[in-house]
Length: 294
Length: 338
Image 1 (cartoon, rainbow over the protein chains, first blue to last red):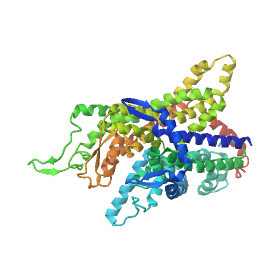
Image 2: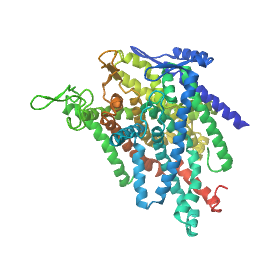
Image 3: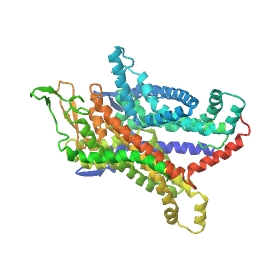
Image 4: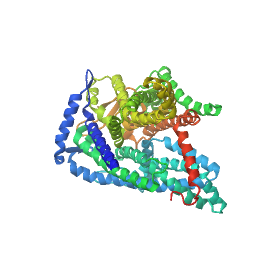
């Protein structure tokens, strides 16, 4: 019972924080020197409270030519698109990273170390760099073969899926593979692994069945940072692909309408909160309050 | 500190320092490094090229749209980017520490409010928040009321301050764990005040961690600068000039940056990405090199300051705990977690 009260308390506090954050665009002004317009800020927050009474009246500008859309319509049409990309690239990243880390574990010692170094280099690449080089690669392939493999820009109402999903999943893959390898390495020295080898099981079998089973738990613990990383990368991708996605709407709203910005942030926060809370609840039941804190 | 670790850390540090030094020397060596060249002539005086020049026409990396030597421009901008990132990281640590000290000494119920408020920063890309805060200043920067260098300073402070709550809460939680340890409780019972505990126990511990934290923050600041760059919000501001011939022509804005900082360079050239991919890829590669250097510095520092350390560190503690728990678990070998 206490847990439910605490969780809902936390939920409302974060929403309050998001609300304060939504008016942040009217906090600073410059008039021969920097001015902190606190009064205007609170006035703006009050105004956005009034606006929120009637969400249909809020309008958001979007696209190159600043077309006006009403808030519920634009949220409905972009939300599904952006989250389709986010979630599918998440699952794509998980599958790919499991496969890659499995392969790296099977490599000989030298190959293992080389791939670790390679991962470190990949980790340093900024998301923008990855996206831009993918776009250039696609154009180059198009010039060579006359086949446009993927759409690199979302024009008008056309929507591109493949390339954004691939680009968005690269950094999570690197992050996840590093995590997996670190945990697998820790696990690999334990007695039950040796026992498995001693019984004559192959390395391919032991790593896949016994090691991965114990490493999955760490994956669930790192779910939150991965999603937060992907969220900010999704924004970068929406800018670079000129996608009119949800983060783009949020971005435009952040400078034009505090109420829309707040509602948009809620639409990100609430599903995430529900997923993480149920996830941590399930995990706790599963582990029966063991060694990990979620 | 073994010599191997020292060697590992010296190479990336040297690269960064060399870049900064070269960056300061560029205006001395080439006083007209950012001269605008409208065209190139060959020996006989014929026009051979119009900007942007290709790498073959202007060594080594060609030029941007205004005909300035791109390589020199990037080198000259390096000092702003690197110092900005270092300064942001430094400010973040200072603000974060102050915030964390307050947070860890506050009563628990206020702490919970603060934690929730701080967590709200996580659910939205930082670049959007920074952009939203700074956009009102853009309207006084464009007509020239707000000088570029002052804008630069304001931007640095905003970028640093915006992470103070989340960083502060993270540090504060670590501090709380640290303050709950036995030797702190012992010194409390022996009559040490808060100030004393802070001075004798907290500060030395924090300083060691903060060096590692610092280089992590530099990396984060750099990637934030890139994101702001593609949003056309660069350090020191971007002046926009409309190069379209008439109102009917497609808009053709050209951006000018006073600092030629790397993020600004990316933002200035992002429209040319398909015609001149080098103009975007090279600054990004420079960023990648610096981030790689900072990452390797971080991991080396972590090895020196945190993992090699005997008592109090969390890393060690967690490891020991895990070893203990697995010793218990590994009795039933194949049915873990059942």
